[in-house]
Amino acid sequence: MEQEQFWYDSAEEAVNAAILKSGKKPKAVAVELWPHMKMDSAYARLKNSLRDDKDEKLTLDEIIHICRVTASYDPLYYMAEELSHSRPQFRAPNDQEADLAHAAQSQPKERRRLPSA
Image (cartoon, rainbow, N blue to C red; front, side, top):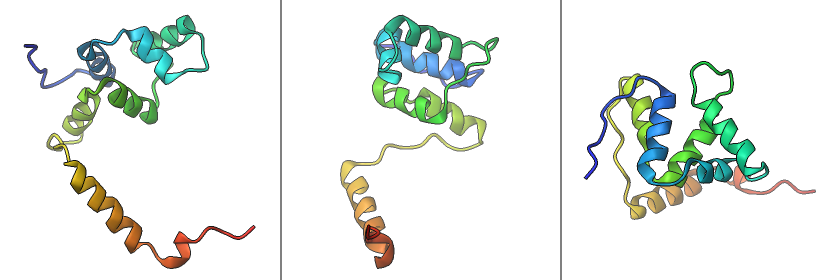
């Protein structure tokens, strides 16, 4: 069993750990991120975005996508630590559904209607 790492020196290190822990090939993760690119180009972009000495960086949406694709949340844990927050806990699916239903019901009626064309 792999021991969980509790801190990272950088966001790039946390993202890299998420990819490695998932067991997925980095090239496969890169293609998931940028399906419109050739595999080698996407992989090069991912490698460059995980290096401190390169200007290319991942967007927050791309990091979230990596977490979803890898089912590893090391980048989220890194952000929580950097922002002096506790590690977030998973929500049960029923809790998520209840939150969505509450949010939909609490929206003003005029915001729920689609604009007429």
